[in-house]
Length: 91
Image 1 (cartoon, rainbow, N blue to C red):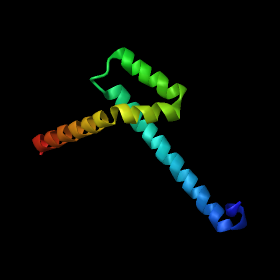
Image 2 (cartoon, one colour; image 1 turned 45 degrees about the vertical axis):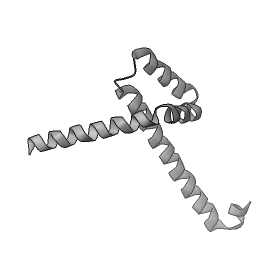
Image 3 (tube, one colour; image 1 turned 30 degrees about the horizontal axis):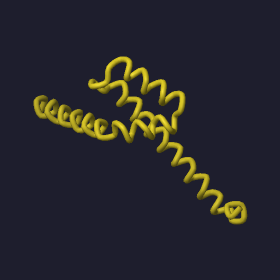
């Protein structure tokens, strides 16, 4: 009710909801990229995570971040180190 009494608050909430939605899409994309690029997951595990995330998106992504969030960080660090070594060799 407060947002409709003050038009500026309604605009603020609309922008907030939009950015929260964009952040949610970004996290979903990062999780899906990690599921398919993870070398320590087998084929059936990848299929399970994919189906779990598609069937129940909020719960699936939340559980994935709890269960494999540390591995996501390790994968990103490894990719960064590889890119740095590759750039150093090319320079």
